Length: 165
Ligand SMILES: CC(C)(COP(=O)(O)OP(=O)(O)OC[C@H]1O[C@@H](n2cnc3c(N)ncnc32)[C@H](O)[C@@H]1OP(=O)(O)O)[C@@H](O)C(=O)NCCC(=O)NCCS
Image 1 (tube, protein in one colour):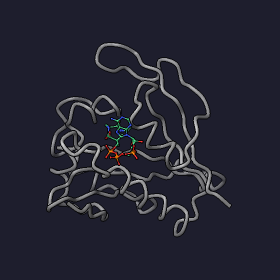
Image 2 (tube, helix red, strand yellow; image 1 turned 135 degrees about the vertical axis):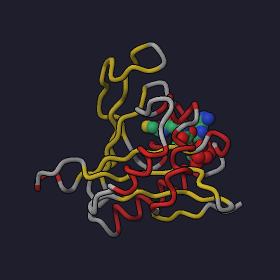
Image 3 (tube, helix red, strand yellow; image 1 turned 30 degrees about the vertical axis):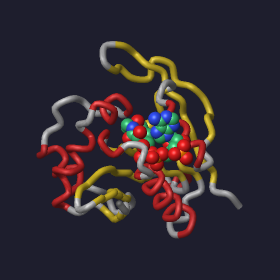
């Protein structure tokens, strides 16, 4: 089945909520359990002009999403964007994450003049770290007790990809 990548539209909030409500998506991100539809409706509606919110669609269903967010409002950091992503648990390991990241990197490198993509990832999230390394992200450091997850604190790596010359 082919993966279509497109920008999120206002009506995508239910599909986005369902992706982010999966056990692996919850464990790998900063989401809380019981995300409401209203919260996702608002998040999509409030997407800033500077940002991009991509969704992956298979057979008409939203199976993943990736956000590109301006890292800071100051002019001197306008070349840096944060990345966040998740794939629906039922569609893991089918190339959805790769399709989303490839689209984001094309946008970053060839259209948006982004020099630096940055993200944080829990140190035990081997699938995500492998995906990021495949696209040229490197670990720059480690935050201790970065976030609370399932009853315990967890460390996270900060990773970045610098646009090749
Ligand atoms: C990380 C994530 C986005 C990967 O998405 P995906 O659609 O499964 O990824 P793909 O099928 O495109 O695989 C891409 C690469 O990721 C790595 N990967 C994916 N799943 C993996 C697994 N279970 N174990 C090891 N590596 C894995 C591999 O390097 C793979 O490349 P390969 O197939 O050439 O070996 C997905 O697992 C996910 O959403 N996890 C939960 C949320 C999350 O952790 N988000 C990241 C927050 S920082």
